[in-house]
Amino acid sequence: MSERVSAAGAGEPGPLVAVGPELPPDLVHHLEAPADRMLARAADRWPHRTAVIDQDGRVTFAGLEDAVGRLAHRLRARLGGSGAVVGVSAQLSIDYVVAYYAVLRSGNVIAPLNPLLPGPMLAHNLSRVEAALVLATPEVAERLAQVRGQLPAGMLVTGLSEARGPGRPGAEPAILPERAPADPACVLFTSGTTGMPKAVVLSHHNITVNALQVAQAHRLGPETVSLVNLPTYHPMHLNPAILSGAVQVLCPVPDVGTAIGLAREHRATHYYSMPVWLMRLATHTGLVETRLPELRVIASGGSALPADAADLLTKHFEVPVLQGYGLAETSPLTHSDEPVLPLRGSVGFPVARTECMVTDLDSGAPQPPGRSGEVRVRGPQVMLGYVGEEPGSHLDADGWFATGDVGRMEPDGRLVLIDRIKDVFKRDNLLVSPGAIEKRLRAHPAVAECVVVDYPDKFAGAVAAAFVVPEPGFEDRQIDEIVAFANTEAPRYEHLEFVEVVEEIPRSAGGKVQRPYLRAEMLRRRRRGQ
Image: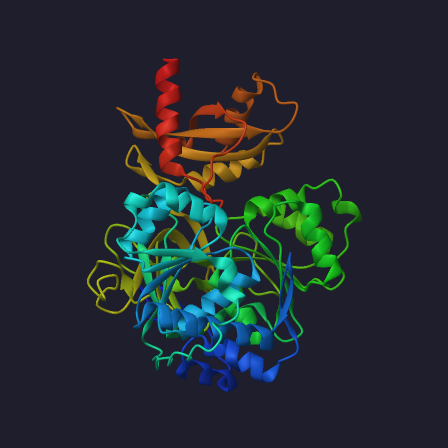
């Protein structure tokens, strides 16, 4: 739903604030407790139901609760007090689920670590939050050992595999602390695609309310079976499923055959993945023979899924492909489209108790539908703040958080994303969206993938340049044809000037495009060729 909050004048559309629905009254009691109570309540209600399935086995809700309690007591005994930051390798595994809730229950703060990051970046993140302990896989522990001198003084590293270990015989259980919903619970690190990662502090309330928001938006319940086909675990997939009593089937590999096999075996109703892997699914040679009769929705997140790939998946599986939107700073989800009638190219409506508006990039004035600007959100899932910055400094006087993304609002309140503010640029003082050019490029049959960046120009300020991954059979003579195709019917300031053909697009460990690196690479290539 949405509401207009002001009118620009007679007959003119006024600025629009889109407002999400209310939460179900029978679930708001969750907000009065710390986040780990979601698991405790699920274990009380569905003790013998399978909660999580990974490559090593499965565990019930009661089994999870028991393991969490044992580890929470061990963590409390080891760390002594409350509020210490505990890094945990965010493997897609049952061990990570146990560690996540045990850290919260012990009164400490969990910092999920991307296990694909190199040692120096792991050290940067751990030092930023002064971590006291890390529960690591052997691979992550080895990388940390190589950068030992860059780690926080006194930080301990132990095995994540110990998460489900027994308590010490005869040991007195530590007394677990009381925790309030407003207390810090989690530190998430931003993706770092536009600079060094920031450390985002989330409260127990942030985590719990976003679990409720996601569960409502994606229509999760005890009958749900979620296939999680991602390289790492994210709270957005973990917490809503636990709260809803849903089964999670974990598949951390990009192999389409493996993911489809697990979805079919466990009769998945929800298929969660990231755009790069869903694009492989959409073009997989075995897709024609693939059927998932229980599937109700495919959900993509992390970055934009090309519309043609979403169309292929919708046509084949006869289910909606949902695009969502969120940030580490918003726990993360702020928007999700409707499972019944998703709008092509949209990330949907605000989730429950969330407001959204679009503001002018220069003046900050709220914009009417159809006009682009910076996306701003306000809601209970917005973070406590950044580590090292003044509390509340991330919000304006009215509590709005500026996302750094450019978008526009549809008249019904749906949000359409355009680009990151740091990605858009001006040519001849006119704003250029790389995403708009990429959309035109992807429509050419010879283009498999592409990324557009700005290239300095002493007369225009900057012009558009593209990296293109071609389809098989591509010939160099087609470059001029691709440029002409992309520029047809495009305004002059959005014309593509240069194309570099590459075998693949470099991405971060989380699958996101690394535009700062690509800008530098384009400069290097063009200057070398001149």
